[in-house]
Length: 181
Image (cartoon, one colour):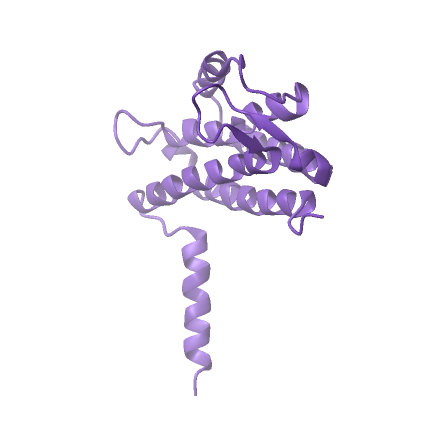
């Protein structure tokens, strides 16, 4: 039995998503068009990207239950998701996408068996490693989201905001300092 199973995977994803939603809530809607550089996604596009990123593993593991990625149309799927990212949305719509899609994905993860998580999926020829477990692959959306959340936290700094996790840490440190004799 895996010590870190489906329930843990779902809860850790929920934690990451709650933190992303908090950032989405804190950035003013008039800053959703902000881009750190001209060739990067805007805040709104980045948040939409995060809201959609679970759809690739969802297609692979939940809908198709693939045991091999050979022949999987990654370029086509990425093109579809990229086009969806570009659709204009309000802050409220993006937050709803993050919240609803995140809970849908976490609910799926929560119901997985240890046996399913241990199954191996063959990668396309030439990829290293040649095989990954579903568990490893299903960690990917959380890791990908954390990568983009780091970008969003830097954007918050560029917008003059202190990210909520930084504020929380500062408050904890101030409390610990104040408690010292």
